[in-house]
Length: 64
Image 1 (cartoon, rainbow, N blue to C red):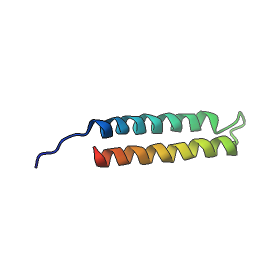
Image 2: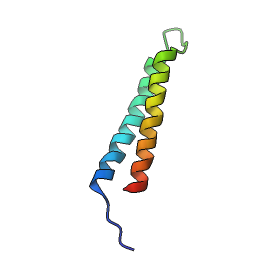
Image 3: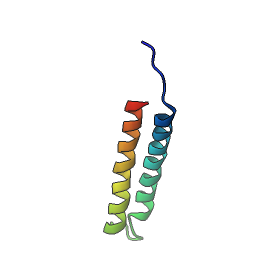
Image 4: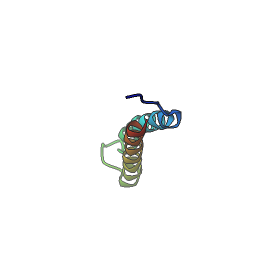
C-alpha cells in the first residue's frame, strides 16, 4: 500500500502535542496554590485544555 502523509494533519499533530504538553505543565504550576491546594477554576480550565489538545493530537495521528 502507498500512503501519502497529509501536511495539514501533520501540523495538527504538532499543535495538539505541544498544546497537550504545555497545558499539562500549566496545570501543574497554575492549578495549585502555594499550600498545594487545588484552585478549582484554574484547574478546570487547564484540565479542559489538556483533554482538548490530547483529542486533537490523537485525531491528527489517526488522519495524518
